[in-house]
Length: 144
Image (cartoon, rainbow, N blue to C red; front, side, top):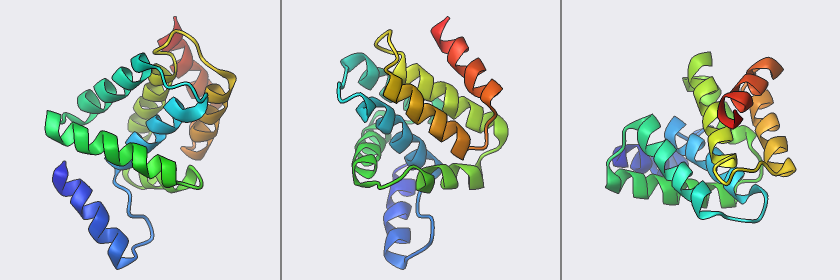
């Protein structure tokens, strides 16, 4: 994983069009959900870390690096398309659905979904070319 983070910085310096790895893009999207309602809840942060660790099978050290890189990248981002583009290029539909479900898990970690969180997840689902029914199924699988 550390190698992937270092690769990210190498690609940025070389000027490649999409420097984001799937891991970093996913971490940044999850971080956007945490930041959406301007109320960072500890339960959301724990869900964020847990989801990244399990989804990508990361060690504690690699997880710490990815969490920090994801938060920093999300803060510097001007749009979501740069992250979803990386995911679309490298993931199949099933993997994108898993990411969508993870977004809902982070949003619902505090047992409520703010309207802005739902709006951002909807935009991400659209950018990942996931249908509205997949969007709803993922939401219901987390909230019920």
